[in-house]
Image (cartoon, rainbow, N blue to C red; front, side):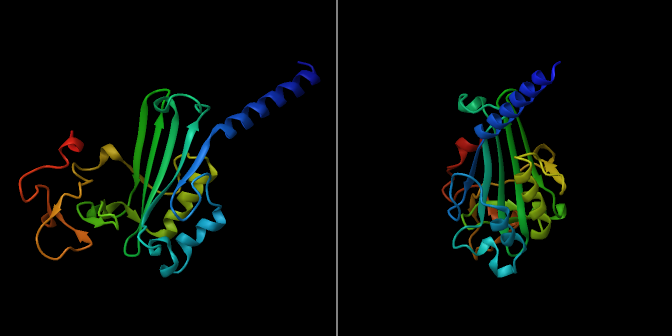
Length: 214
């Protein structure tokens, strides 16, 4: 191969890589930051490493948000189901730290990868009620200082699964790890719930979540 051919080959390769990178669409699901693009690492780091009362759970009414990418691996422009996508959803609480949820969809193979940060699994049958009344397993929460390197790695490696923390695959979780909000039993409504605090049946016997249960 001549020197000139090598130069043009390198240019083509660099152009292909640049085009591939430009096709990926990075988004932020948070009222705190613009939707298009990602905040900088400098902006995000204090949300994990600042003093307790300055972390993001103290945003008014907002304890869960996400970073995501659409159009992975050159799939931008394909039908939605055929695209490559990856989401990192973060749920934060002053009491238990952060739960990270990693969801990746490969539209080319029609396969998904779903896993969660692994915390104190002895508390997997306890749930935190988020500010939007969703239930998140306490056993999947990890400290803020431990979560930040994983978030940073996710951003720096364009959505690759971070290696800095331990993950648990969704299929390895016990049945009913993720509970529908359902109906809480009469009495005080604690932020942390156990099995005895949750009633999956409505007072009138109807099931408004039937379509979601499958």
